[in-house]
Image 1 (cartoon, rainbow, N blue to C red):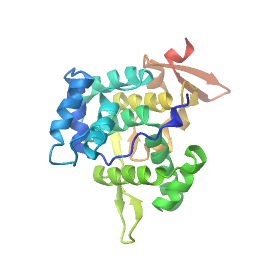
Image 2: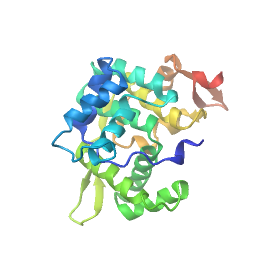
Image 3: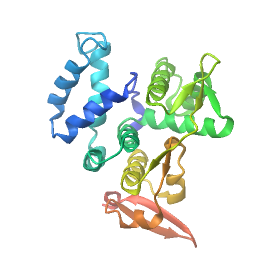
Length: 247
């Protein structure tokens, strides 16, 4: 089944909730116990007392990002956990970003479309964004609402901002500088999302889905990272794939 079958990410997610979920993962908390912790954390913050309530759905999204991740994203999760405690605030956001790319294809497509629109015109509306998603996700009644909640999450994280025109968003000027160790986690996430594809290094490092970040990472550092295999094609093109994709 294609990764792009289920929308899944349909809640606004605050940064402090992501930090709480990641802290549980770093502590080695089991996914079912993480759910219990997050349920209590959101008591009185997000409405609902049942699993299918707003609170229950928010807990499910958070737990899917840092707890019960898809099997293909488990190595990514372990590397993100290994980087989290020593990372600066900006890099912690990048690690959350990597886990969301690795676990929610809709998130990847929303942020990639956002990055392209910001590069092309500097701002965007939800309608612009949704039109770019329909080709992949189809005409779904839930698509625009899910995209809106991801955008509102990005506003809360400080990577896009509202404009004076209601319903229009723009980027923020400052990109977050990300070192090589966390940068390799972001690249790994893109390859998890690509489902075992081999992609050019230049395409990965400049991927529109990574628009909030300036990644200080070169091809030599990618070559030395154990999770990657790098193939030279032509005179100067390095193609990167996950090492396990060869098996």
